[in-house]
Amino acid sequence: MSEMPQIIQKAGSARLIRYKLTRLYQTALSRPTRLLNGQVSNQPILIYPFAGIQQQLESMYCRPGFENLLRHWVNRTSYGQILADIYDGQVWKTLKDKNSANFFRPDTTDSNLGLMLNLDWFQPFKDTTLGWASLNRTFEFQNGREIRAALILTSCDIPATRKVCSHVSALVSCHRCEKKANYENHQHNFAGMDDMDEWFVIRDSAKHRQDAIGWKTCKSEAARKRFVKQTGVRWSELLRLPYFDPIRFIIVDLMHCLFLGIAKWIVK
Image 1 (tube, rainbow, N blue to C red):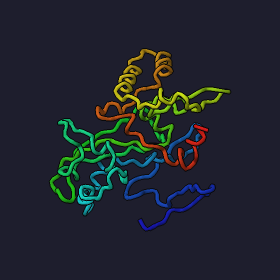
Image 2: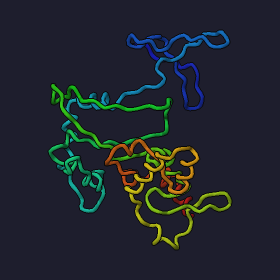
Image 3: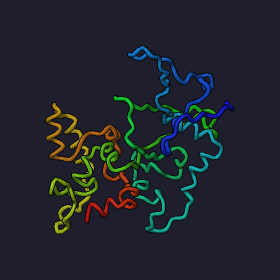
Image 4: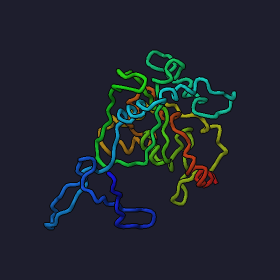
């Protein structure tokens, strides 16, 4: 593949690119499709590039030195109560496995992984599912090895985070505490701190999970809408993970909340 892609159109920073070749590594890139008007259009076979979790992990584990890099956090310097990295957080220190032992510990540094979910709400199909499988080979273990991974962090913008973690819209309530928004002049706002002692309380993840199950068991769309209005909770497939905490595993969206001033706008 020595031929370069040919740029056929430019719109701002976006570029539409067409390859001169019709095949990539002996794989067809498109197929002719007859449209309703009788014209023939070349439609892409691969709608979007996708690599499953197993494939990505297998690729990384086959890199020289990757497994050794996974062990570096055990001997890193800590700074007391200062949070310098994810390893200093309580989730990393307290997450338990099915045997009630710490999931992240020195003897499992290169086999127990913490995953972060980053989502910008791209879903080209309905009812998509993800699967898991064992790694057949790694750089240090040519005959394969067992690894385990836990989803311990969601890092998305605010709308995506609320959807994927089963929360109602951020315009209505906070996902972390019991603060509810006001609705004045056809707009939501979070003004008013006089009753802070009443709502500045961490949400109960067990109750959240229970409410999400309640939403799932509603018999109609109307019943679900009433339930959401009452509880502020919907069902999420992430709740099928028994350890997943939809309250603690959400991080602050720094770009929008701090750098772009959303937090300042909310409380002004």
